[in-house]
Length: 242
Image (cartoon, helix red, strand yellow):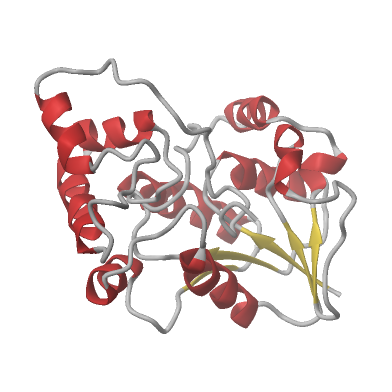
């Protein structure tokens, strides 16, 4: 059996990487699926922290990508915006590239923590099919997200931002607001992705049905009192909301 950490570059999988090394658990490869649309802070964190750490520990870190165009480019060309109900982008830009790069048979370490146990059907689930299997060490250890943050801080690292594409429809309102405040260029690109969809403006990226362009107008006038509506669903498992 081969063992692979499905790396999402967020809090959970960063903590899990540190603990796999600390507990001397088998790990043949760390795989990160790059959609081409991660936040700049995520790419910087991988370059500055994760890759040097893996080299020091003699662990193989691999970034994989689909053979399709980058997700942002694909969405605009195909007039298809990522959906909260049909996660086609997760399948094509995350799961399939990771499967293609993984040795067989393979057990994936998945970065789902104890307070996210609802994200899997059975907390004791160990896999599916005959080739690929899932293992949830953070659930086995009953570690919450706050526990993961504590481990990272104790190691002396800065806590990574929530992982995920900058135009992910699962973002909370605060995520969109942070994007507007800190990366206006990416916010404008997210608007372009949203407006390219065949169903726009009937369908838009934020979960409250308000297009990003309208939110931009409110925030541009200092309005920060819009009610939130979505729970946090980062891609920390490496597979995006698996």
